[in-house]
Image (cartoon, rainbow, N blue to C red; front, side):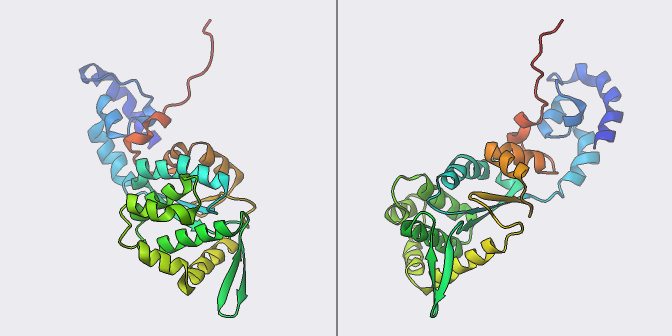
Length: 256
């Protein structure tokens, strides 16, 4: 991409005066969006040489390992992950794994869970796991989970209200049945298997994995500004929501 843009720069300079908008962007971002490409007069060139390749790029996969009453998890879900999902879902996939720092043991044909923040957290984890299991469509269940996580009430006390608010009232009886029965145990056990199978093993929650990888840098950047991180990580043509993050930071200097 950059070699193409470098060779294009001289030719475009000649035609900038004819553009309806000034091209105030570095050549490295000319093809980052149709809006910028249009202002710089390079739409056709970008379409032929860059976008045809970039449109095959895979979405960024973000997997969150969390627990329902962990303050840091709730903050990340409600302030970073859900807003990012709403704005740039076309370039990211989100997977939620509600288990976190819990422990499990088998008792007969049942699984018994012990959670870091007590019994109510285990109930919240199972409610959210059952919702994921039953609804399956993240666009339908994520608003419900966000509603639970941003509430000051306990998950089991607010879940019904959140279901009504986010169009899950018809399936909520099935979610309750799941959460109060053996299906919920098995669904939460599957979340435990996924969590305990992490490599490297998780050390805290929220634990963020991007494209199958976890590093301290990924964790820090994702928690600081997830939209910016996903936009930077995505290899395809950036959506308009990414534009503010594409320009290099202005240097804080006093010119001589």
